[in-house]
Image 1 (cartoon, rainbow, N blue to C red):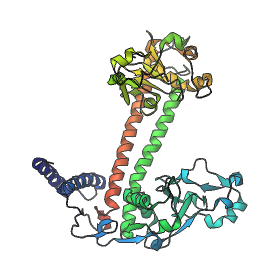
Image 2: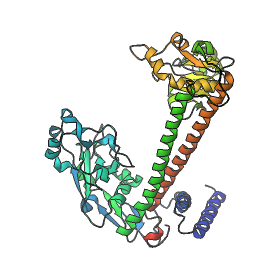
Image 3: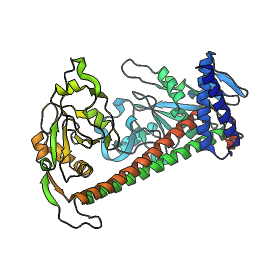
Length: 475
């Protein structure tokens, strides 16, 4: 970093401090965002100075887990909670599961937003009584013991009385000065996760046990401040949860609209003509893909995007904007692939059959595709949405022993019912508008998640103290 760059960073830090000083104390989220930026710049300056140690500002102290406020304490989990391992495999077998009974929480049911209630194994009342020492109470925390060792969930009232599996550890707070929701958020913080990963054992799969977890250090402010921090983070979770629910609702509405509009069961205002029956082969040119020889370097790393099914499944939305690999003109000329125009439908015909994107630029594909170039009178956007509803039909037509694949002839013979071009365009516009609304909500949700992460970084380390906790300060 040059002297001029350092001065610019220092100037921005000064401007951020002024903005923070002028903010009302109630602007918590905005304060978190500004503090996160200020902290990032300060850390950048610190690394440039190469001081070799984190500076300790007034009102803070250095501990084994970093710099924290002077009135915060550092304890091992054993000092504030009881830790218990789930039942051994000999105590509970898969054949003990029943269709109705008491749920058992396993690793796959853990999330930052609580326990996931899907696909829960159940045990009978007699097994529940036999395993009562492994029952859960509200405000317990269940921790993954094997594999994803930094996953954990806070038990809510809905899971009170459930059981936990042998792949989990139960943390039950025993210290009345510790607030379980705060502890759960602390467990989800990246510094704590790093401490967990650092002490885990196992060569092929990381694992924890009660003794290891008990000895991990945690940071504890006063009980009122714990509650204040947990409440602020809970509000952030509430916003994320509300956006999740709204997104799911909008997706369901879109799915219903597709079922109605793409079958002609519901017509948009102004359209009444008959739909015609045709085939996919009559509405589009179907083109295979290919792979240039990987033994010839001159064929690769050119200017032509080269698409694989992984590019399709790894791309959100309906447009393919970029690919992981590219080929040269020479590579294209020496293989059976063709250069597809903007707007071509990139349809996976192998493995992830039926996955589809619209090409946002000229592109070619490997042999795992039967790409479609729409003929005159066919809206590529309308056909894109229609093909999404035909994925089960494509899978039914697929054959193969090593992996399933649908051939060009079978793709071409798929029957369609389509309206005139103007109605195709109108339907595609309605569905595109729904997609745009969902994408905007997803962007809001992602931003809310980023804000929450910034809040956790600041609040759980004491770099910011909330007003209701007594004061607002920043490290």
